[in-house]
Image 1 (cartoon, rainbow, N blue to C red):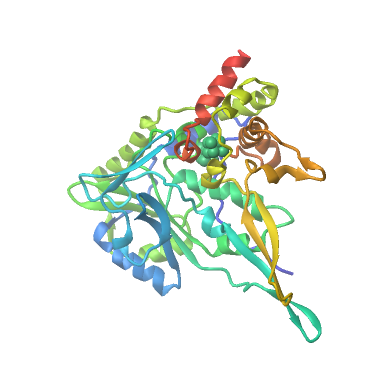
Image 2: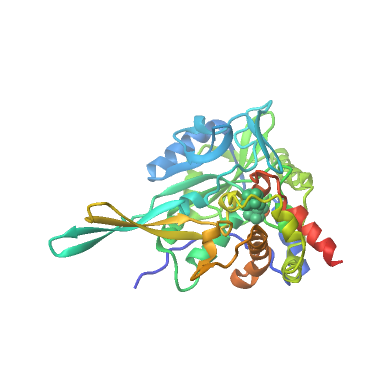
Length: 403
Ligand code: SF4
Ligand code: SF4
């Protein structure tokens, strides 16, 4: 019998109804409580880190600058990291700027998320080839890629935790996701700055990390450019043991803690996750959906950028000779008209009904389905909406209509 590989599960976002004492304790941790055993890794030791990952057969993927954005892609060396870059974000707005320092992780999040590695945008599931005995099925290689995810933010750890429950929890796991995720090494980097679109602090998913990582780093740009580091697993501890480290000073720990506090304090957008399922259920007939639809392009950008959205379609293709056919899985979106197609037509024919489906599922019925909110407060859907539709503003409007 196949045993499910272990997946490091981050703390889920706060569930409605969980007690306040626990919630407050988690908030303190996410705001930068530094655990007892920490060391400092110098920025110059990143070459050693990359070499340690390569020796173990990991393909290092992480942030890099491409086409005017910080995206996640293969990193060949620390030189590929977005040294000295930061991002400016607002509804429908994203720009990169040069920083006046050499920070490696001085940005927040970009249009990509880690789901593109564990749940690729398109993936061939199998092929059929005609042979002497009829059609033969050819399965895809089962060995999962061996990724080291470098620069995972706290909200992204929470998003991976949500996708773990969707794809690898319960009786029917998605094998490619499960195996890729189990093989992946996660190196988290705590946020020390927030974008204007972030609201992880109120979702209790960031900006500090407290679980679900193999190694956690906090960048400190003081007299010396260092990273306060701590291991979260045996794998992480082994790698940390290979790096040149020294004990963190009290000043470095204070700076790391203050950086995470700073990121939390910068967040202007706030939301009350515990009240959202009730609000979403009560808003079914709200006229606000039609007002949003006057601006919404039904372009699906928000769902593609969202680190937790997981809908897909399956497509069969064959060549003209009739000798070869393939089955592909591709990301889909509840904003695509065909997504709700049943016999006779689409169930959700209007943009208003599609936006309502997305928001009420994400913030409301997701809780009953998977035990947590489907939102981790990363702000991507706000930044990457071409017309700047703002989930926080829409929730405020729906709440205002109820009161
Ligand atoms: S709904 Fe928006 S803010 Fe929430 S996780 Fe998805 S992209 Fe991020
Ligand atoms: S809310 Fe924005 S990103 Fe999402 S489908 Fe509508 S226009 Fe596109």
